[in-house]
Length: 72
Image (tube, rainbow, N blue to C red; front, side, top):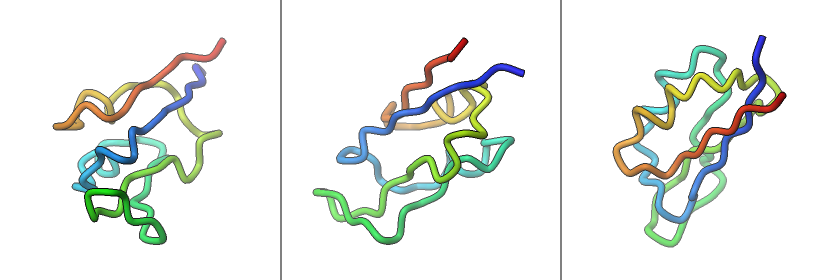
């Protein structure tokens, strides 16, 4: 199965959670321990080793703060 790596522009994330709901591998969580410069708790990769590079999160993100990279 393909592997992936995801990156978040955490300073721009509004913590809406849409990416969390569409991740088939439960890789993403809202980081309640962090508040970004906009005052939101941003999403982050809680289990990055499980990412399959499906890109559901990046496609769903309304603010385009997620980048997905395929790893060979």
